[in-house]
Length: 137
Length: 280
Image 1 (spheres, one colour):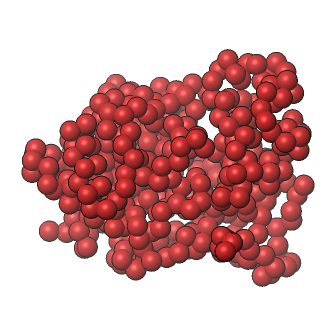
Image 2 (cartoon, chains in turn cyan, blue):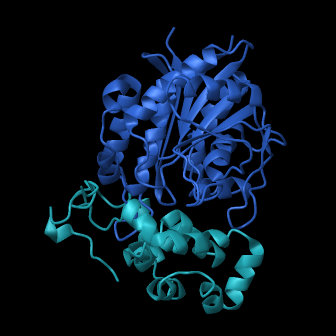
Image 3 (cartoon, helix red, strand yellow):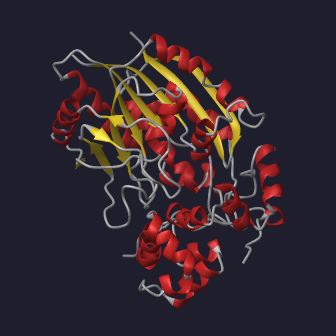
């Protein structure tokens, strides 16, 4: 019997479940390695060479090189692990969150100051199409 | 005999820790957040605990994907603030209470909750930001701390009811410890927030306020809320709120609310904070 995924219809959201975790193990463990300063230095010096030390898929490596966080999440990345990449880049959680929504950091920060993204229309895929959040790739 | 005297819940946002560490708490953006903790620091100074049992989650710091314990209790004498990628926070080391921690571990495991015992662990912002919010910037933390890490990173985290029942077992364990200790239990994380994907930035103030109401008034019923409701209503990272139920389970069925605070935003997150006392 397949594992139940009652969260699959939440729009714009990837739950880090068993399937994602299996897919993303090496990607996330690469991220974890960036907790150590010498590894951060080696990564920054030659990102491709550093990534090639990990048994990650080519798509995962390309997503890291492009800093495409939505792709990394789709390919099994978990945001708390991916945070090691944008921390290495000297960027904040708000920077990364803005990037994933396709908004500028200023627009995103303003949305948060105005109370954040409303749950209205964002609970279920297709519940209120005119307010559905755009999937940015 | 040891006893649990109060419960505290608070968000543990890393940017809040950075604001404290960089002396920005009076900046216009941050001042309203820290104003909500003024009462708490005064109250804490007047009611100092001997031990804080601090429920939090590790954020891919001490636990990677190699080991994912659902519940992990820190039984060491010391815990170092972790280097989360930009150097450790400039906060004092955390002094544990190994005697009480081992006692709780044994008692709770014998109550059918399978805890992971941890003898070495660095603690990340999930644990140190609440300490900073409640105690400010002392040269040493004024009490011992037992770190209790809950997995909320890898789905599935424990259910609300599992957390609530665990809180009850923790209370029984504390009350069976011979030494006379004033113990507080803190539940941290939340409130609504989503840090990932196109839906990032989700905030649900109505859900958060209702969650605090129900945590105070009808925790048994709140504990039945399915995990998917947390994720749908409060964001994928809002699932951290299950940890507040561990705190609540360790208090008496009726509680007195000493302090309640809510503010949006701190970075990506809604800040929620409660101080609850057992009703006697």
